[in-house]
Image 1 (spheres, rainbow over the protein chains, first blue to last red):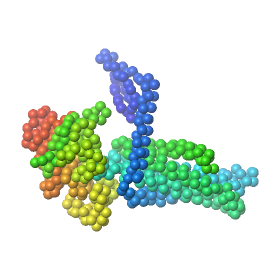
Image 2 (cartoon, rainbow over the protein chains, first blue to last red; image 1 turned 90 degrees about the vertical axis):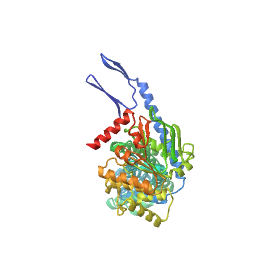
Image 3 (cartoon, each protein chain N blue to C red; image 1 turned 30 degrees about the vertical axis):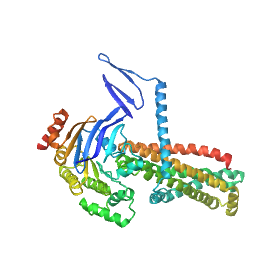
Image 4 (cartoon, chains in turn cyan, blue; image 1 turned 45 degrees about the horizontal axis):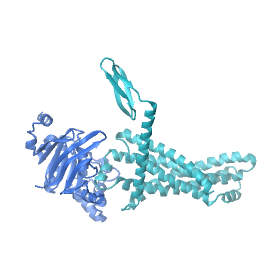
Length: 294
Length: 250
């Protein structure tokens, strides 16, 4: 964001947000600029990031507080569950089917020289349930729903719809954010379960159809290696990711700057921040689950 | 006449910017009061402080003698039910139809669950703003003037005592602007509501208001009945009034 622009004897000087510049004015020589040291810039950057983190933590606290506050608007929860869950079934089915099929192709070509291609089912089922299904489902939902959450709330903010709610004593976090967070918490794991089933089915079709592996042996091997904890761990990850995505995206929407550009930027920031956050969270959860569950 | 709202030494700053500086104003019950002044003089911030959705840094806001600043959140919510707010661009919820917009405060503020009662009230409000057939339309299908009238209907749905209008005629042609000004007068006369306007439509403000307050750089520099304010010796007021009325004469 450009905060200041000065034209000095034909030279343009432009400063961005969070930069400190000392301007000395001299009638004869024009302005003289003293730029801040790198340590000052770094300190201001750190303070700004700390402020943003603090605001987000306060926002999370409010989300938790309003989750347990009456009235519970069941209709809004169901509406969001339909938007996030039911409406996402086609895209999740298609993407997980493709991933299962591609993964099976790669695994079979890798395992064939060792005559171990029958283990493809186990490999696909384990990696889908532990990692691919929750991560791919979440990434697809960020693209489809996360950006929409940020854009919708951002538009509501810049057109004073949020102010209108507040004047009617309706808290936007209670009315708009909580239903989205709860719906994400419920629907992300359900869609992940769907992705598991469809991905495994896609791999099965490739293994038994294109490569003519014996179906009974393939399935027996897969069910022997796949444990319930593998599925649970993926579903837990999906639930946590659902909360991360919905809170980050709604936060960016509610803090959108004015104008079409502000709304666009908030959507972009929401998608980038939630994508990076779920990958970091996935790594941390995988580390803990490796030690505790598997 | 008794003041339904009294502002005492109200101040509000954002970072180093003083938006309101010691504002003291009385708003009489069942009267129309217009707040006029240049853009960016803190008129909208004044509204938000007045209804309690923004806390002032200093000063007090009294509603019927009770201090809003000192109230708990629950008490404030009860008081806020007596305020209606008609926004500059109507601020209709674009994910809802017109009828759902008007039904929103009935459900959320008054807690009415009876669908027949809600439908009846929505129909009454649409008839009152003389737009009985637009309930199923989306806000995006309405003209600017219709949106503003629906915004007023939504604000009136909960039967408030005070209706705040934020620049009700901005962006409208003079004919539509006149329609909205007539609506403000109807709200005041027929429903006996206290109306407070923020407006740049100076001739209309002087014509329909019982009282005018002029804001400049976060301070009230003139207030009183229109005939008194129009004779103010303050340079800014004179300049504002002369320019507004001379452009009308042209």
